[in-house]
Image (tube, rainbow, N blue to C red; front, side, top):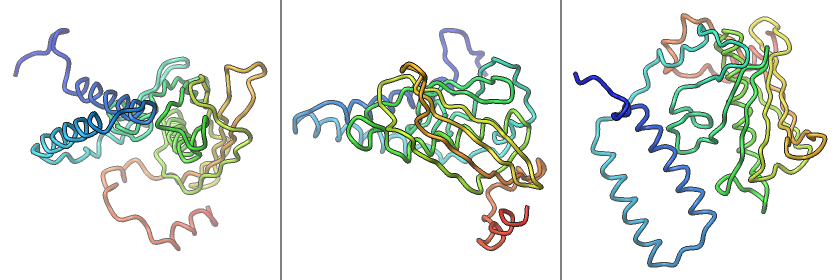
Length: 233
């Protein structure tokens, strides 16, 4: 095996570079006009690239990559997730390019939403914001060293979420009742005087045992069982 040198980026770094290129491509497609000839050429190139990638072996996520709750993050330090995570992963085509740091018991992220995140003109799609909070509550689980799954996620949109402005997303755990972990969070417009709250979120996460992490590919519990966890704790 050849040792990597600074001039030879690791495989994960190459995947992260590719993911970033895909995200930037999406923003460029949404944010810029192109004539039919150019679009035809680009679509053909992308279809060829897709065919090329699909010649490789299928990838299956290592369950151990989910086990990050035992890792301690010092106050003020950056927090990381696995690279393919949809909203915060470096190699995800759907990522938001967020920068997450620990601040005491809070996870805080800086994010600037762009063209491909647009819902109504000039503002973010609400589902993008919901996905951001779901990921942020996952970072809080990392601070508390407790794996869990989302049971409920509730958002109140106080004001339009703008594009192309720095925002701060903050999340924390406020209570635990049995297996239910209660979370709260806010999305804040840090570019405006007074830093108004744009969105408030709450969530109930259902804790699982560390030993169960290896069985994450198993089927989800039936609806009545999941409802029981939420109702009875």
